[in-house]
Amino acid sequence: MFTLNCKGRLLIIDSPIVMGIINTTPDSFYAESRKSTVDAALQTAEQMLNAGATILDIGGQSTRPGSEQISADEELKRVIPIIEAINKKFPESFISIDTFNSTVAKHAVDAGATIVNDISGGLMDDKMLSIVANLKVPFVCMHMKGTPQNMQQNSFYENVTKEVLDFFIERIEACKLAGIKDIIIDPGFGFGKTIQHNFMLLKELDLFKSLEKPLLLGISRKSMIYKTLNISSEDALNGTTVLNTIGLFNGANILRVHDVKEAVETINIISAYQK
Image 1 (tube, rainbow, N blue to C red):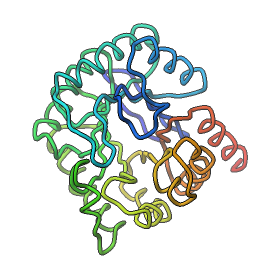
Image 2 (spheres, rainbow, N blue to C red):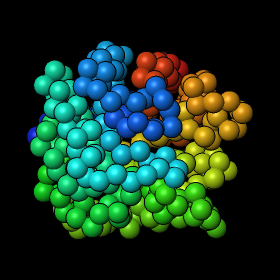
Image 3 (cartoon, one colour):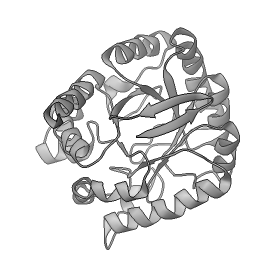
Protein backbone atom coordinates (compact mmCIF):
# COMPACT_ATOMS: atom_id res chain seq x y z
CA MET A 1 0.00 0.00 0.00
CA PHE A 2 1.17 3.51 -0.83
CA THR A 3 -0.04 6.76 0.76
CA LEU A 4 0.60 9.98 -1.17
CA ASN A 5 0.19 13.47 0.27
CA CYS A 6 -1.50 15.59 -2.41
CA LYS A 7 -1.47 19.13 -0.97
CA GLY A 8 -2.86 17.88 2.35
CA ARG A 9 -5.23 15.30 0.83
CA LEU A 10 -4.23 11.67 1.09
CA LEU A 11 -4.31 9.45 -1.97
CA ILE A 12 -4.19 5.85 -0.75
CA ILE A 13 -3.21 3.22 -3.31
CA ASP A 14 -4.07 -0.13 -1.74
CA SER A 15 -5.17 -1.59 -5.09
CA PRO A 16 -4.49 -0.47 -8.68
CA ILE A 17 -6.04 2.85 -9.76
CA VAL A 18 -6.67 4.59 -13.09
CA MET A 19 -5.34 7.91 -14.37
CA GLY A 20 -7.42 9.33 -17.23
CA ILE A 21 -5.69 11.32 -19.99
CA ILE A 22 -7.10 14.70 -21.04
CA ASN A 23 -4.95 16.48 -23.63
CA THR A 24 -5.44 20.14 -24.46
CA THR A 25 -3.07 19.85 -27.41
CA PRO A 26 -4.10 20.02 -31.09
CA ASP A 27 -1.66 17.29 -32.17
CA SER A 28 -1.64 14.44 -29.63
CA PHE A 29 -1.10 11.07 -31.33
CA TYR A 30 -4.61 9.85 -30.39
CA ALA A 31 -7.14 12.32 -31.76
CA GLU A 32 -9.97 11.36 -29.37
CA SER A 33 -7.89 12.52 -26.38
CA ARG A 34 -7.71 16.12 -27.64
CA LYS A 35 -9.99 18.43 -25.63
CA SER A 36 -9.24 22.03 -26.52
CA THR A 37 -12.22 23.70 -24.83
CA VAL A 38 -13.25 23.88 -21.18
CA ASP A 39 -16.68 22.39 -21.92
CA ALA A 40 -15.21 19.42 -23.79
CA ALA A 41 -12.67 18.79 -21.02
CA LEU A 42 -15.36 19.01 -18.32
CA GLN A 43 -17.55 16.53 -20.19
CA THR A 44 -14.62 14.11 -20.53
CA ALA A 45 -13.62 14.59 -16.89
CA GLU A 46 -17.16 13.76 -15.75
CA GLN A 47 -17.26 10.65 -17.92
CA MET A 48 -13.88 9.49 -16.62
CA LEU A 49 -14.72 10.09 -12.97
CA ASN A 50 -18.07 8.33 -13.33
CA ALA A 51 -16.24 5.40 -14.95
CA GLY A 52 -13.93 5.12 -11.95
CA ALA A 53 -10.86 7.28 -12.65
CA THR A 54 -8.99 8.37 -9.54
CA ILE A 55 -6.63 10.86 -11.23
CA LEU A 56 -7.16 13.16 -14.24
CA ASP A 57 -3.93 13.95 -16.10
CA ILE A 58 -4.07 17.30 -17.92
CA GLY A 59 -1.44 18.08 -20.55
CA GLY A 60 -0.92 21.07 -22.82
CA GLN A 61 2.39 20.13 -24.47
CA SER A 62 2.40 17.30 -26.97
CA THR A 63 5.20 14.80 -26.29
CA ARG A 64 4.73 12.47 -29.24
CA PRO A 65 7.94 11.77 -31.21
CA GLY A 66 9.01 14.84 -33.17
CA SER A 67 6.47 17.14 -31.52
CA GLU A 68 7.11 20.88 -31.45
CA GLN A 69 7.92 22.44 -28.09
CA ILE A 70 5.65 25.37 -27.22
CA SER A 71 6.22 28.29 -24.85
CA ALA A 72 5.24 28.20 -21.19
CA ASP A 73 2.72 30.97 -21.85
CA GLU A 74 0.99 28.93 -24.55
CA GLU A 75 1.00 25.84 -22.34
CA LEU A 76 -0.53 27.81 -19.48
CA LYS A 77 -3.28 29.17 -21.75
CA ARG A 78 -4.18 25.62 -22.67
CA VAL A 79 -4.20 23.98 -19.23
CA ILE A 80 -5.02 26.53 -16.51
CA PRO A 81 -8.67 27.27 -17.45
CA ILE A 82 -9.36 23.53 -17.70
CA ILE A 83 -7.68 22.71 -14.37
CA GLU A 84 -9.59 25.51 -12.65
CA ALA A 85 -12.89 24.36 -14.13
CA ILE A 86 -12.38 20.69 -13.23
CA ASN A 87 -11.22 21.58 -9.72
CA LYS A 88 -14.31 23.75 -9.21
CA LYS A 89 -16.82 21.23 -10.56
CA PHE A 90 -15.17 18.07 -9.23
CA PRO A 91 -13.28 19.10 -6.07
CA GLU A 92 -13.01 15.47 -4.95
CA SER A 93 -10.88 14.55 -7.99
CA PHE A 94 -7.10 14.35 -8.03
CA ILE A 95 -5.67 16.40 -10.91
CA SER A 96 -2.23 15.79 -12.36
CA ILE A 97 -0.40 18.32 -14.53
CA ASP A 98 1.57 16.68 -17.34
CA THR A 99 4.48 19.09 -17.93
CA PHE A 100 8.26 19.34 -17.91
CA ASN A 101 8.15 23.10 -17.29
CA SER A 102 8.46 24.18 -13.65
CA THR A 103 6.57 27.46 -14.23
CA VAL A 104 3.63 25.54 -15.66
CA ALA A 105 3.81 23.07 -12.78
CA LYS A 106 3.63 25.84 -10.18
CA HIS A 107 0.72 27.68 -11.79
CA ALA A 108 -1.14 24.41 -12.37
CA VAL A 109 -0.85 23.41 -8.71
CA ASP A 110 -1.97 26.90 -7.69
CA ALA A 111 -4.99 26.37 -9.98
CA GLY A 112 -5.94 23.04 -8.37
CA ALA A 113 -3.59 20.30 -9.59
CA THR A 114 -2.24 18.06 -6.83
CA ILE A 115 0.33 15.93 -8.71
CA VAL A 116 3.14 16.87 -11.13
CA ASN A 117 3.83 14.41 -13.97
CA ASP A 118 7.16 15.13 -15.70
CA ILE A 119 8.22 13.03 -18.71
CA SER A 120 11.84 14.09 -18.16
CA GLY A 121 12.11 13.17 -14.48
CA GLY A 122 13.14 16.75 -13.73
CA LEU A 123 15.98 16.83 -16.27
CA MET A 124 14.53 19.27 -18.82
CA ASP A 125 14.06 22.06 -16.25
CA ASP A 126 16.63 22.31 -13.46
CA LYS A 127 14.13 24.15 -11.23
CA MET A 128 11.49 21.42 -11.39
CA LEU A 129 12.53 19.28 -8.42
CA SER A 130 12.91 22.19 -5.99
CA ILE A 131 9.59 23.70 -7.08
CA VAL A 132 7.74 20.38 -6.70
CA ALA A 133 9.30 19.99 -3.24
CA ASN A 134 8.04 23.46 -2.27
CA LEU A 135 4.59 22.70 -3.66
CA LYS A 136 4.42 19.57 -1.45
CA VAL A 137 2.83 17.38 -4.11
CA PRO A 138 3.74 13.92 -5.47
CA PHE A 139 6.08 13.76 -8.45
CA VAL A 140 5.69 11.33 -11.33
CA CYS A 141 9.26 10.67 -12.46
CA MET A 142 9.38 9.19 -15.96
CA HIS A 143 12.32 7.79 -17.91
CA MET A 144 13.02 9.28 -21.32
CA LYS A 145 16.21 9.12 -23.34
CA GLY A 146 16.71 12.51 -25.00
CA THR A 147 13.78 14.83 -25.71
CA PRO A 148 10.52 14.33 -27.63
CA GLN A 149 12.23 15.93 -30.60
CA ASN A 150 15.14 13.43 -30.76
CA MET A 151 14.27 10.53 -28.44
CA GLN A 152 13.62 8.01 -31.19
CA GLN A 153 17.15 8.64 -32.52
CA ASN A 154 18.57 7.82 -29.05
CA SER A 155 17.00 4.40 -28.51
CA PHE A 156 20.19 2.41 -27.86
CA TYR A 157 20.64 0.25 -24.74
CA GLU A 158 22.87 -2.64 -23.73
CA ASN A 159 20.24 -3.72 -21.19
CA VAL A 160 17.14 -1.52 -21.24
CA THR A 161 15.67 -2.69 -17.92
CA LYS A 162 18.96 -2.28 -16.04
CA GLU A 163 19.58 1.17 -17.52
CA VAL A 164 16.07 2.38 -16.67
CA LEU A 165 16.42 0.96 -13.14
CA ASP A 166 19.76 2.75 -12.72
CA PHE A 167 18.11 5.96 -13.92
CA PHE A 168 15.42 5.67 -11.25
CA ILE A 169 17.92 4.94 -8.48
CA GLU A 170 19.71 8.19 -9.36
CA ARG A 171 16.53 10.23 -9.88
CA ILE A 172 14.87 9.02 -6.68
CA GLU A 173 17.94 10.14 -4.75
CA ALA A 174 17.87 13.52 -6.54
CA CYS A 175 14.17 13.92 -5.69
CA LYS A 176 14.79 13.09 -2.03
CA LEU A 177 17.70 15.54 -1.82
CA ALA A 178 15.46 18.24 -3.30
CA GLY A 179 12.87 17.54 -0.60
CA ILE A 180 10.22 15.64 -2.58
CA LYS A 181 8.43 13.21 -0.26
CA ASP A 182 6.24 11.17 -2.62
CA ILE A 183 7.59 9.78 -5.89
CA ILE A 184 5.79 7.71 -8.55
CA ILE A 185 7.92 6.00 -11.21
CA ASP A 186 7.03 5.57 -14.89
CA PRO A 187 9.36 3.52 -17.16
CA GLY A 188 8.35 5.70 -20.11
CA PHE A 189 7.03 3.27 -22.70
CA GLY A 190 7.67 4.66 -26.18
CA PHE A 191 9.96 7.46 -25.01
CA GLY A 192 13.33 6.79 -26.61
CA LYS A 193 12.65 3.05 -26.85
CA THR A 194 12.00 0.61 -29.67
CA ILE A 195 9.01 -1.73 -29.69
CA GLN A 196 11.33 -4.52 -28.54
CA HIS A 197 12.58 -2.38 -25.64
CA ASN A 198 8.97 -1.66 -24.63
CA PHE A 199 8.04 -5.33 -24.53
CA MET A 200 11.18 -6.20 -22.56
CA LEU A 201 10.34 -3.51 -19.98
CA LEU A 202 6.79 -4.84 -19.70
CA LYS A 203 8.06 -8.42 -19.33
CA GLU A 204 10.48 -7.37 -16.56
CA LEU A 205 8.22 -4.78 -14.95
CA ASP A 206 8.14 -6.61 -11.62
CA LEU A 207 11.85 -5.78 -11.13
CA PHE A 208 10.86 -2.15 -10.56
CA LYS A 209 8.98 -3.15 -7.41
CA SER A 210 12.40 -3.24 -5.72
CA LEU A 211 12.33 0.57 -5.76
CA GLU A 212 9.33 0.49 -3.38
CA LYS A 213 7.51 3.28 -5.23
CA PRO A 214 4.10 3.31 -6.94
CA LEU A 215 4.57 2.12 -10.52
CA LEU A 216 2.72 3.89 -13.32
CA LEU A 217 2.07 2.08 -16.61
CA GLY A 218 1.44 4.30 -19.64
CA ILE A 219 0.99 2.13 -22.73
CA SER A 220 -2.51 3.22 -23.79
CA ARG A 221 -2.96 3.01 -27.59
CA LYS A 222 0.79 3.45 -28.17
CA SER A 223 2.80 2.35 -31.19
CA MET A 224 4.01 -0.84 -29.50
CA ILE A 225 0.39 -1.95 -29.91
CA TYR A 226 -0.75 -0.55 -33.21
CA LYS A 227 2.51 -1.17 -35.08
CA THR A 228 2.70 -4.74 -33.78
CA LEU A 229 -0.88 -5.39 -34.93
CA ASN A 230 -0.60 -3.25 -38.08
CA ILE A 231 -3.62 -1.16 -37.11
CA SER A 232 -4.26 2.48 -36.11
CA SER A 233 -4.26 4.00 -32.62
CA GLU A 234 -8.05 4.29 -32.98
CA ASP A 235 -8.26 0.48 -33.17
CA ALA A 236 -5.76 -0.20 -30.35
CA LEU A 237 -8.12 -0.49 -27.37
CA ASN A 238 -8.15 -4.28 -27.29
CA GLY A 239 -4.34 -4.40 -27.43
CA THR A 240 -4.19 -1.79 -24.68
CA THR A 241 -6.37 -3.96 -22.43
CA VAL A 242 -4.14 -6.99 -23.05
CA LEU A 243 -0.96 -5.09 -22.16
CA ASN A 244 -2.59 -3.44 -19.13
CA THR A 245 -3.53 -6.92 -17.93
CA ILE A 246 0.07 -8.09 -18.25
CA GLY A 247 1.24 -4.91 -16.51
CA LEU A 248 -1.11 -5.43 -13.58
CA PHE A 249 0.09 -9.00 -13.09
CA ASN A 250 3.67 -7.65 -13.17
CA GLY A 251 3.11 -5.02 -10.48
CA ALA A 252 1.60 -1.87 -12.02
CA ASN A 253 -0.20 0.33 -9.47
CA ILE A 254 -1.51 3.08 -11.77
CA LEU A 255 -2.86 2.66 -15.31
CA ARG A 256 -2.58 5.87 -17.36
CA VAL A 257 -5.19 5.47 -20.10
CA HIS A 258 -7.43 7.12 -22.66
CA ASP A 259 -10.23 4.61 -21.96
CA VAL A 260 -11.09 4.63 -18.27
CA LYS A 261 -14.09 2.27 -18.24
CA GLU A 262 -12.15 -0.56 -19.86
CA ALA A 263 -9.13 -0.06 -17.57
CA VAL A 264 -11.30 -0.10 -14.44
CA GLU A 265 -13.01 -3.27 -15.65
CA THR A 266 -9.60 -4.85 -16.23
CA ILE A 267 -8.57 -4.06 -12.66
CA ASN A 268 -11.86 -5.42 -11.27
CA ILE A 269 -11.65 -8.66 -13.24
CA ILE A 270 -8.06 -9.29 -12.12
CA SER A 271 -9.00 -8.47 -8.52
CA ALA A 272 -11.83 -11.01 -8.64
CA TYR A 273 -9.51 -13.60 -10.20
CA GLN A 274 -6.84 -13.07 -7.54
CA LYS A 275 -9.36 -13.41 -4.72
